[in-house]
Length: 159
Image (cartoon, rainbow, N blue to C red; front, top):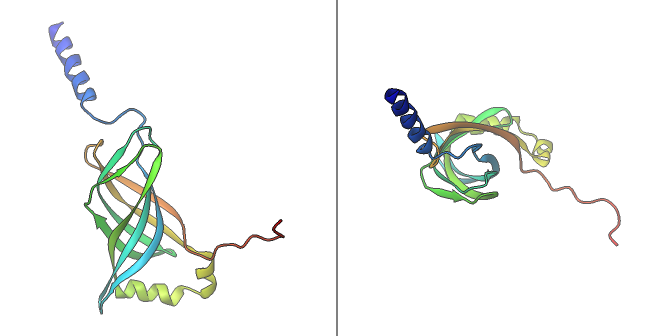
């Protein structure tokens, strides 16, 4: 009987020390913009604007993240950040993350993009892994959306 009590006690301590509240979810990721920060012959540097949205009822601290970014269905850039960032409960935060791409990836983007596609916005997919202070280890993520494009002007008459 005492062995069972010991095992149950150890399990309760482990569950209590996990630090991950029940029903916790990872932040949602969206790309807010891409800015060129450096051009080279073989490699280009960018700042990728990311919005991280925390839908939990508690704050999350992002310790690090790494990602691959596809734009218009093609491999585009790889980025990483090890700068800590707090995302308040039920809120979002934006961060600029350094990313790099090879010249061939940038050239393929320019060759396949039409001016009309730029007006509509560029579809993207971001996938990678994130380290949250409340979660042990790295957790994978993947999101997609559209970045950029011209804003639609409202039709009709203003009153």
